[in-house]
Image (cartoon, rainbow, N blue to C red):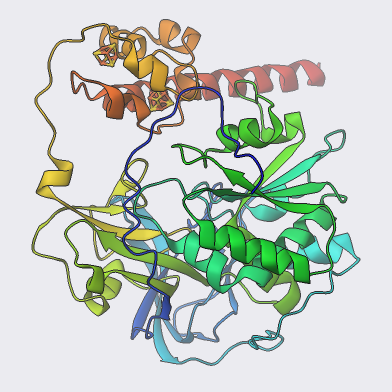
Length: 461
Ligand code: SF4
Ligand code: SF4
Protein backbone atom coordinates (compact mmCIF):
# COMPACT_ATOMS: atom_id res chain seq x y z
CA UNK A 1 0.00 0.00 0.00
CA UNK A 2 1.40 3.42 -0.95
CA UNK A 3 1.97 6.09 1.70
CA UNK A 4 -1.14 7.65 3.15
CA UNK A 5 -1.89 11.30 2.49
CA UNK A 6 -3.82 13.82 4.52
CA UNK A 7 -4.40 17.57 4.82
CA UNK A 8 -1.97 19.73 6.76
CA UNK A 9 -4.04 22.05 8.96
CA UNK A 10 -6.28 21.08 11.87
CA UNK A 11 -8.66 18.13 11.86
CA UNK A 12 -9.95 15.68 14.44
CA UNK A 13 -10.36 11.91 14.89
CA UNK A 14 -13.95 11.10 15.92
CA UNK A 15 -14.97 7.43 16.22
CA UNK A 16 -16.19 6.42 12.77
CA UNK A 17 -19.18 4.31 13.94
CA UNK A 18 -19.66 2.72 10.51
CA UNK A 19 -22.14 0.22 11.98
CA UNK A 20 -23.94 -0.28 8.65
CA UNK A 21 -20.78 -0.95 6.61
CA UNK A 22 -21.63 -4.62 6.01
CA UNK A 23 -25.25 -3.97 4.98
CA UNK A 24 -25.51 -4.62 1.24
CA UNK A 25 -27.58 -2.15 -0.80
CA UNK A 26 -31.29 -3.08 -0.83
CA UNK A 27 -33.77 -1.69 -3.35
CA UNK A 28 -36.66 0.08 -1.61
CA UNK A 29 -40.17 -0.86 -2.77
CA UNK A 30 -41.91 2.00 -4.58
CA UNK A 31 -44.42 4.11 -2.62
CA UNK A 32 -47.86 5.07 -3.89
CA UNK A 33 -46.99 8.78 -4.05
CA UNK A 34 -43.76 10.74 -4.56
CA UNK A 35 -43.10 14.46 -4.00
CA UNK A 36 -40.35 15.73 -6.28
CA UNK A 37 -38.65 18.91 -5.11
CA UNK A 38 -37.76 21.64 -7.61
CA UNK A 39 -34.78 22.66 -5.43
CA UNK A 40 -32.61 19.53 -5.52
CA UNK A 41 -29.46 21.37 -6.54
CA UNK A 42 -27.44 24.48 -5.83
CA UNK A 43 -28.67 27.49 -7.80
CA UNK A 44 -32.06 28.44 -9.19
CA UNK A 45 -34.92 25.99 -8.52
CA UNK A 46 -36.02 24.12 -11.66
CA UNK A 47 -39.20 25.23 -13.47
CA UNK A 48 -41.96 22.59 -13.90
CA UNK A 49 -42.78 21.61 -17.51
CA UNK A 50 -45.72 19.36 -16.63
CA UNK A 51 -49.21 20.29 -15.48
CA UNK A 52 -51.67 18.75 -13.03
CA UNK A 53 -53.34 15.75 -14.68
CA UNK A 54 -50.40 14.94 -17.01
CA UNK A 55 -49.30 11.33 -17.32
CA UNK A 56 -45.54 10.92 -16.84
CA UNK A 57 -43.08 8.07 -17.27
CA UNK A 58 -40.13 7.29 -15.02
CA UNK A 59 -37.07 9.16 -16.29
CA UNK A 60 -39.17 11.79 -18.13
CA UNK A 61 -38.19 15.45 -17.71
CA UNK A 62 -40.68 17.14 -15.39
CA UNK A 63 -38.74 20.37 -14.72
CA UNK A 64 -36.13 22.38 -16.60
CA UNK A 65 -33.17 24.44 -15.36
CA UNK A 66 -34.19 28.02 -14.60
CA UNK A 67 -30.73 29.56 -14.89
CA UNK A 68 -27.08 28.83 -15.66
CA UNK A 69 -26.61 27.23 -12.24
CA UNK A 70 -29.67 24.95 -12.17
CA UNK A 71 -30.54 21.40 -13.26
CA UNK A 72 -33.12 19.21 -14.95
CA UNK A 73 -35.42 17.16 -12.73
CA UNK A 74 -36.98 13.88 -13.90
CA UNK A 75 -39.89 11.81 -12.69
CA UNK A 76 -38.77 8.91 -10.49
CA UNK A 77 -41.88 6.82 -11.24
CA UNK A 78 -44.63 6.51 -13.84
CA UNK A 79 -48.02 7.94 -12.91
CA UNK A 80 -50.14 11.09 -12.91
CA UNK A 81 -49.22 14.56 -11.68
CA UNK A 82 -51.60 15.30 -8.84
CA UNK A 83 -50.37 18.70 -7.69
CA UNK A 84 -47.62 21.28 -8.08
CA UNK A 85 -47.39 23.24 -4.86
CA UNK A 86 -45.09 24.39 -2.06
CA UNK A 87 -44.30 21.73 0.53
CA UNK A 88 -41.92 21.72 3.50
CA UNK A 89 -38.45 20.30 2.81
CA UNK A 90 -36.18 18.60 5.34
CA UNK A 91 -35.30 21.91 7.00
CA UNK A 92 -38.94 23.03 7.03
CA UNK A 93 -38.56 25.55 4.17
CA UNK A 94 -41.46 25.77 1.72
CA UNK A 95 -40.29 24.59 -1.71
CA UNK A 96 -42.25 23.83 -4.88
CA UNK A 97 -42.82 20.05 -5.30
CA UNK A 98 -44.47 18.01 -8.03
CA UNK A 99 -46.69 15.34 -6.47
CA UNK A 100 -47.01 12.20 -8.62
CA UNK A 101 -49.42 9.36 -7.89
CA UNK A 102 -47.66 6.21 -9.02
CA UNK A 103 -49.38 3.94 -11.52
CA UNK A 104 -46.54 1.56 -12.25
CA UNK A 105 -42.90 1.69 -13.14
CA UNK A 106 -42.77 2.31 -16.86
CA UNK A 107 -39.68 4.15 -18.11
CA UNK A 108 -39.33 6.74 -20.85
CA UNK A 109 -37.87 5.63 -24.19
CA UNK A 110 -34.13 5.68 -24.82
CA UNK A 111 -33.07 4.79 -21.26
CA UNK A 112 -30.92 1.68 -20.92
CA UNK A 113 -31.95 -0.12 -17.73
CA UNK A 114 -29.68 -3.12 -18.29
CA UNK A 115 -26.80 -3.82 -15.93
CA UNK A 116 -24.31 -4.52 -18.76
CA UNK A 117 -21.08 -2.62 -18.17
CA UNK A 118 -20.24 -0.17 -20.98
CA UNK A 119 -16.54 0.70 -20.84
CA UNK A 120 -15.95 2.52 -24.13
CA UNK A 121 -15.79 6.25 -23.46
CA UNK A 122 -17.56 8.45 -26.06
CA UNK A 123 -14.96 10.54 -27.87
CA UNK A 124 -17.32 13.50 -28.29
CA UNK A 125 -16.83 15.74 -25.24
CA UNK A 126 -19.97 17.77 -25.91
CA UNK A 127 -22.06 14.58 -26.17
CA UNK A 128 -20.86 13.61 -22.66
CA UNK A 129 -21.53 17.07 -21.23
CA UNK A 130 -24.99 17.16 -22.80
CA UNK A 131 -25.87 13.75 -21.39
CA UNK A 132 -24.67 14.80 -17.92
CA UNK A 133 -26.70 18.01 -18.13
CA UNK A 134 -29.81 16.51 -19.69
CA UNK A 135 -29.89 13.72 -17.13
CA UNK A 136 -29.83 16.18 -14.24
CA UNK A 137 -26.53 15.11 -12.67
CA UNK A 138 -25.46 17.20 -9.67
CA UNK A 139 -22.70 16.75 -7.10
CA UNK A 140 -23.79 14.18 -4.53
CA UNK A 141 -21.16 14.94 -1.91
CA UNK A 142 -23.27 17.61 -0.22
CA UNK A 143 -23.08 20.75 -2.36
CA UNK A 144 -25.33 19.47 -5.24
CA UNK A 145 -23.59 21.80 -7.71
CA UNK A 146 -24.63 21.00 -11.32
CA UNK A 147 -21.94 18.62 -12.60
CA UNK A 148 -21.89 19.75 -16.25
CA UNK A 149 -20.94 23.26 -15.10
CA UNK A 150 -18.11 21.98 -12.88
CA UNK A 151 -16.77 19.81 -15.71
CA UNK A 152 -16.65 22.74 -18.11
CA UNK A 153 -14.15 25.20 -16.58
CA UNK A 154 -14.12 28.78 -17.88
CA UNK A 155 -11.66 29.57 -20.71
CA UNK A 156 -8.20 30.08 -19.26
CA UNK A 157 -8.73 27.55 -16.46
CA UNK A 158 -7.22 24.12 -16.84
CA UNK A 159 -7.90 20.97 -14.84
CA UNK A 160 -4.68 19.23 -13.86
CA UNK A 161 -6.17 16.72 -11.47
CA UNK A 162 -9.61 15.18 -11.06
CA UNK A 163 -10.06 13.95 -7.49
CA UNK A 164 -12.78 11.38 -6.82
CA UNK A 165 -13.77 11.79 -3.20
CA UNK A 166 -14.06 8.44 -1.45
CA UNK A 167 -13.16 9.73 2.00
CA UNK A 168 -16.68 9.44 3.47
CA UNK A 169 -15.13 10.85 6.63
CA UNK A 170 -18.42 11.63 8.40
CA UNK A 171 -19.11 9.07 11.14
CA UNK A 172 -21.93 6.55 10.53
CA UNK A 173 -22.38 7.10 6.76
CA UNK A 174 -21.69 4.08 4.54
CA UNK A 175 -23.53 4.71 1.26
CA UNK A 176 -20.36 5.69 -0.65
CA UNK A 177 -18.55 2.69 0.84
CA UNK A 178 -21.24 0.33 -0.38
CA UNK A 179 -21.26 1.69 -3.94
CA UNK A 180 -17.45 1.46 -3.97
CA UNK A 181 -17.87 -2.26 -3.25
CA UNK A 182 -20.96 -2.97 -5.32
CA UNK A 183 -20.67 -0.59 -8.31
CA UNK A 184 -16.86 -0.46 -8.50
CA UNK A 185 -16.35 -0.64 -12.25
CA UNK A 186 -19.18 1.76 -13.07
CA UNK A 187 -17.60 4.34 -10.75
CA UNK A 188 -14.25 3.95 -12.48
CA UNK A 189 -15.86 4.33 -15.93
CA UNK A 190 -17.63 7.46 -14.61
CA UNK A 191 -14.28 8.81 -13.42
CA UNK A 192 -12.71 8.04 -16.80
CA UNK A 193 -15.54 9.90 -18.57
CA UNK A 194 -14.97 12.99 -16.40
CA UNK A 195 -11.20 12.71 -16.91
CA UNK A 196 -11.76 12.65 -20.67
CA UNK A 197 -14.22 15.59 -20.55
CA UNK A 198 -11.63 17.59 -18.59
CA UNK A 199 -9.05 17.05 -21.31
CA UNK A 200 -7.26 13.97 -20.02
CA UNK A 201 -5.87 15.26 -16.72
CA UNK A 202 -4.67 12.77 -14.10
CA UNK A 203 -7.31 11.27 -11.85
CA UNK A 204 -6.88 10.30 -8.19
CA UNK A 205 -9.48 8.22 -6.37
CA UNK A 206 -8.93 9.12 -2.71
CA UNK A 207 -10.19 6.59 -0.13
CA UNK A 208 -9.63 6.69 3.64
CA UNK A 209 -7.60 3.90 5.21
CA UNK A 210 -10.58 2.63 7.24
CA UNK A 211 -12.09 1.18 4.04
CA UNK A 212 -9.51 -1.48 3.05
CA UNK A 213 -12.08 -3.61 1.18
CA UNK A 214 -13.04 -0.63 -1.00
CA UNK A 215 -9.38 0.19 -1.68
CA UNK A 216 -8.75 -3.41 -2.70
CA UNK A 217 -11.87 -3.60 -4.90
CA UNK A 218 -11.07 -0.32 -6.64
CA UNK A 219 -7.47 -1.34 -7.34
CA UNK A 220 -8.53 -4.74 -8.67
CA UNK A 221 -11.18 -3.20 -10.94
CA UNK A 222 -8.76 -0.55 -12.18
CA UNK A 223 -6.29 -3.26 -13.19
CA UNK A 224 -8.99 -4.89 -15.34
CA UNK A 225 -10.12 -1.71 -17.09
CA UNK A 226 -8.35 -0.07 -20.04
CA UNK A 227 -7.90 3.46 -18.64
CA UNK A 228 -4.64 5.33 -18.04
CA UNK A 229 -3.77 8.07 -15.60
CA UNK A 230 -6.17 6.92 -12.86
CA UNK A 231 -4.87 5.74 -9.49
CA UNK A 232 -6.25 4.88 -6.08
CA UNK A 233 -4.68 6.91 -3.27
CA UNK A 234 -5.03 5.86 0.35
CA UNK A 235 -5.82 8.73 2.71
CA UNK A 236 -5.31 8.83 6.46
CA UNK A 237 -8.47 8.62 8.53
CA UNK A 238 -9.04 12.16 9.65
CA UNK A 239 -12.07 14.43 9.70
CA UNK A 240 -12.88 16.47 7.51
CA UNK A 241 -10.77 14.67 4.91
CA UNK A 242 -13.67 14.80 2.45
CA UNK A 243 -13.83 18.62 2.51
CA UNK A 244 -13.01 19.87 -0.98
CA UNK A 245 -10.15 22.12 0.11
CA UNK A 246 -8.78 19.50 2.51
CA UNK A 247 -8.80 16.81 -0.18
CA UNK A 248 -7.00 19.08 -2.64
CA UNK A 249 -4.37 19.83 0.01
CA UNK A 250 -3.97 16.11 0.79
CA UNK A 251 -3.66 14.98 -2.83
CA UNK A 252 -2.04 17.97 -4.59
CA UNK A 253 -0.40 19.85 -1.72
CA UNK A 254 -2.07 23.04 -2.98
CA UNK A 255 -4.14 25.53 -1.00
CA UNK A 256 -7.26 27.07 -2.52
CA UNK A 257 -7.32 30.78 -1.61
CA UNK A 258 -10.22 32.37 0.27
CA UNK A 259 -13.19 32.83 -2.07
CA UNK A 260 -11.48 30.97 -4.94
CA UNK A 261 -12.67 27.80 -6.69
CA UNK A 262 -10.69 24.52 -6.78
CA UNK A 263 -10.06 25.02 -10.50
CA UNK A 264 -7.88 28.03 -9.57
CA UNK A 265 -5.27 25.48 -8.43
CA UNK A 266 -6.04 23.06 -11.27
CA UNK A 267 -8.34 20.78 -9.25
CA UNK A 268 -11.82 19.38 -9.86
CA UNK A 269 -13.33 17.32 -7.04
CA UNK A 270 -16.24 14.94 -7.58
CA UNK A 271 -17.87 12.52 -5.18
CA UNK A 272 -18.09 8.70 -5.65
CA UNK A 273 -21.87 8.75 -6.11
CA UNK A 274 -21.49 11.54 -8.69
CA UNK A 275 -19.04 9.37 -10.67
CA UNK A 276 -21.66 6.61 -10.67
CA UNK A 277 -24.37 9.08 -11.77
CA UNK A 278 -22.10 10.29 -14.60
CA UNK A 279 -21.62 6.68 -15.73
CA UNK A 280 -25.37 6.08 -15.79
CA UNK A 281 -26.09 9.40 -17.53
CA UNK A 282 -23.49 9.03 -20.29
CA UNK A 283 -23.36 5.28 -20.89
CA UNK A 284 -27.00 4.46 -20.16
CA UNK A 285 -28.77 7.77 -20.79
CA UNK A 286 -30.24 7.26 -17.33
CA UNK A 287 -31.42 10.36 -15.42
CA UNK A 288 -30.44 10.92 -11.81
CA UNK A 289 -33.55 9.71 -10.01
CA UNK A 290 -31.89 7.20 -7.66
CA UNK A 291 -29.17 7.30 -5.03
CA UNK A 292 -28.10 5.28 -1.99
CA UNK A 293 -28.96 6.35 1.54
CA UNK A 294 -27.89 4.89 4.91
CA UNK A 295 -30.39 4.27 7.72
CA UNK A 296 -28.27 4.10 10.85
CA UNK A 297 -27.64 5.41 14.36
CA UNK A 298 -26.43 4.43 17.80
CA UNK A 299 -29.97 3.59 18.93
CA UNK A 300 -30.59 1.06 16.14
CA UNK A 301 -29.50 -2.58 16.46
CA UNK A 302 -27.15 -3.79 13.72
CA UNK A 303 -30.03 -5.84 12.26
CA UNK A 304 -32.06 -2.64 11.71
CA UNK A 305 -29.31 -0.74 9.87
CA UNK A 306 -29.63 -0.46 6.09
CA UNK A 307 -28.16 0.96 2.91
CA UNK A 308 -31.06 1.56 0.56
CA UNK A 309 -31.32 2.42 -3.12
CA UNK A 310 -34.06 5.05 -3.05
CA UNK A 311 -35.81 7.09 -5.71
CA UNK A 312 -36.00 10.83 -5.30
CA UNK A 313 -39.34 12.03 -3.99
CA UNK A 314 -39.84 9.15 -1.56
CA UNK A 315 -40.91 10.68 1.77
CA UNK A 316 -38.35 10.08 4.55
CA UNK A 317 -41.21 8.83 6.73
CA UNK A 318 -41.92 6.12 4.14
CA UNK A 319 -38.28 4.96 4.20
CA UNK A 320 -38.23 5.08 8.00
CA UNK A 321 -41.37 2.93 8.07
CA UNK A 322 -39.96 0.35 5.62
CA UNK A 323 -36.83 0.22 7.81
CA UNK A 324 -38.90 -0.65 10.89
CA UNK A 325 -40.06 2.72 12.20
CA UNK A 326 -38.42 5.44 14.26
CA UNK A 327 -36.56 3.69 17.13
CA UNK A 328 -37.82 4.44 20.62
CA UNK A 329 -34.53 5.83 21.88
CA UNK A 330 -34.10 8.38 19.06
CA UNK A 331 -33.60 11.85 20.52
CA UNK A 332 -32.51 13.46 17.26
CA UNK A 333 -32.98 12.58 13.58
CA UNK A 334 -30.38 13.91 11.15
CA UNK A 335 -30.06 14.01 7.38
CA UNK A 336 -26.34 13.55 6.64
CA UNK A 337 -23.61 12.81 9.16
CA UNK A 338 -23.49 13.83 12.82
CA UNK A 339 -20.83 16.50 12.17
CA UNK A 340 -22.23 18.40 9.18
CA UNK A 341 -25.71 16.95 8.72
CA UNK A 342 -28.92 18.88 9.29
CA UNK A 343 -31.52 18.02 11.90
CA UNK A 344 -34.66 16.74 10.18
CA UNK A 345 -37.48 18.95 11.35
CA UNK A 346 -40.02 17.26 9.11
CA UNK A 347 -39.92 13.49 8.52
CA UNK A 348 -42.63 13.83 5.86
CA UNK A 349 -40.14 15.73 3.71
CA UNK A 350 -39.18 14.07 0.45
CA UNK A 351 -35.77 12.66 -0.41
CA UNK A 352 -33.73 14.63 -2.93
CA UNK A 353 -30.83 13.70 -5.21
CA UNK A 354 -28.30 14.47 -2.48
CA UNK A 355 -30.00 12.64 0.43
CA UNK A 356 -27.40 10.47 2.13
CA UNK A 357 -28.86 9.23 5.40
CA UNK A 358 -31.49 9.02 8.06
CA UNK A 359 -29.40 9.05 11.22
CA UNK A 360 -31.03 8.38 14.59
CA UNK A 361 -29.00 9.54 17.57
CA UNK A 362 -29.79 8.70 21.18
CA UNK A 363 -30.14 11.11 24.07
CA UNK A 364 -26.69 10.08 25.23
CA UNK A 365 -25.07 10.79 21.86
CA UNK A 366 -26.69 14.21 21.55
CA UNK A 367 -26.57 15.44 25.14
CA UNK A 368 -24.68 18.70 25.44
CA UNK A 369 -22.50 19.03 28.49
CA UNK A 370 -22.91 22.27 30.45
CA UNK A 371 -21.15 25.24 28.92
CA UNK A 372 -18.43 27.01 30.92
CA UNK A 373 -16.09 29.98 30.45
CA UNK A 374 -13.50 29.94 27.66
CA UNK A 375 -10.17 28.97 29.19
CA UNK A 376 -8.20 30.28 26.18
CA UNK A 377 -6.64 26.89 25.55
CA UNK A 378 -6.59 27.40 21.76
CA UNK A 379 -7.75 23.84 21.01
CA UNK A 380 -10.51 25.12 18.72
CA UNK A 381 -7.94 26.96 16.60
CA UNK A 382 -5.65 23.92 16.51
CA UNK A 383 -8.55 21.78 15.26
CA UNK A 384 -9.83 24.21 12.61
CA UNK A 385 -8.95 22.84 9.15
CA UNK A 386 -9.39 26.32 7.65
CA UNK A 387 -6.82 27.94 9.94
CA UNK A 388 -9.44 30.16 11.63
CA UNK A 389 -9.63 31.25 15.26
CA UNK A 390 -13.07 30.05 16.38
CA UNK A 391 -12.78 31.59 19.89
CA UNK A 392 -12.20 34.98 18.23
CA UNK A 393 -15.07 34.48 15.76
CA UNK A 394 -17.36 33.76 18.67
CA UNK A 395 -16.29 36.93 20.51
CA UNK A 396 -16.74 39.04 17.37
CA UNK A 397 -20.18 37.47 16.79
CA UNK A 398 -21.26 38.37 20.31
CA UNK A 399 -20.01 41.92 19.73
CA UNK A 400 -21.84 42.08 16.36
CA UNK A 401 -18.57 43.20 14.73
CA UNK A 402 -19.22 42.36 11.06
CA UNK A 403 -16.10 44.10 9.82
CA UNK A 404 -13.96 42.21 12.30
CA UNK A 405 -15.65 38.94 11.37
CA UNK A 406 -14.96 39.46 7.68
CA UNK A 407 -11.35 40.39 8.43
CA UNK A 408 -11.09 37.19 10.51
CA UNK A 409 -12.41 35.24 7.47
CA UNK A 410 -15.61 33.85 8.99
CA UNK A 411 -16.80 33.42 5.39
CA UNK A 412 -14.18 30.65 4.94
CA UNK A 413 -15.72 28.49 7.67
CA UNK A 414 -16.81 25.15 6.18
CA UNK A 415 -19.08 24.43 9.18
CA UNK A 416 -17.25 21.18 9.91
CA UNK A 417 -17.76 21.36 13.68
CA UNK A 418 -14.13 20.49 14.58
CA UNK A 419 -13.96 23.53 16.90
CA UNK A 420 -17.10 22.52 18.76
CA UNK A 421 -15.87 18.93 19.05
CA UNK A 422 -12.54 20.07 20.55
CA UNK A 423 -13.73 22.69 23.02
CA UNK A 424 -13.30 21.57 26.67
CA UNK A 425 -15.64 24.36 27.78
CA UNK A 426 -18.45 22.96 25.57
CA UNK A 427 -19.09 26.35 23.99
CA UNK A 428 -21.49 26.04 21.03
CA UNK A 429 -18.95 27.71 18.76
CA UNK A 430 -20.52 26.54 15.52
CA UNK A 431 -23.92 28.02 16.38
CA UNK A 432 -22.30 31.44 16.84
CA UNK A 433 -20.10 31.13 13.76
CA UNK A 434 -22.87 29.87 11.45
CA UNK A 435 -25.02 32.83 12.40
CA UNK A 436 -22.36 35.45 11.70
CA UNK A 437 -21.11 33.66 8.58
CA UNK A 438 -24.58 33.97 7.06
CA UNK A 439 -24.67 37.68 7.83
CA UNK A 440 -21.17 38.35 6.48
CA UNK A 441 -21.88 36.35 3.32
CA UNK A 442 -24.98 38.50 2.81
CA UNK A 443 -22.86 41.65 3.11
CA UNK A 444 -20.26 40.29 0.67
CA UNK A 445 -22.94 39.33 -1.87
CA UNK A 446 -24.67 42.72 -1.60
CA UNK A 447 -21.33 44.49 -2.09
CA UNK A 448 -20.55 42.37 -5.18
CA UNK A 449 -24.01 43.07 -6.63
CA UNK A 450 -23.61 46.82 -6.03
CA UNK A 451 -20.16 46.79 -7.69
CA UNK A 452 -21.59 44.91 -10.69
CA UNK A 453 -24.46 47.37 -11.02
CA UNK A 454 -22.06 50.33 -10.78
CA UNK A 455 -19.84 48.77 -13.46
CA UNK A 456 -22.87 48.19 -15.73
CA UNK A 457 -23.96 51.82 -15.23
CA UNK A 458 -20.43 53.03 -16.06
CA UNK A 459 -20.34 50.93 -19.23
CA UNK A 460 -23.58 52.55 -20.41
CA UNK A 461 -22.18 56.08 -20.09
S1 SF4 B 1 -16.72 24.95 12.00
FE1 SF4 B 1 -15.64 26.61 10.95
S2 SF4 B 1 -14.48 27.62 12.54
FE2 SF4 B 1 -15.12 25.64 13.38
S3 SF4 B 1 -13.41 24.30 12.92
FE3 SF4 B 1 -14.80 24.09 11.18
S4 SF4 B 1 -14.09 25.59 9.70
FE4 SF4 B 1 -13.12 26.10 11.64
S1 SF4 C 1 -11.41 25.45 22.66
FE1 SF4 C 1 -13.07 26.42 23.83
S2 SF4 C 1 -12.09 26.96 25.74
FE2 SF4 C 1 -10.41 26.56 24.32
S3 SF4 C 1 -9.96 28.56 23.37
FE3 SF4 C 1 -11.45 27.59 22.09
S4 SF4 C 1 -13.42 28.38 22.80
FE4 SF4 C 1 -11.93 28.75 24.43
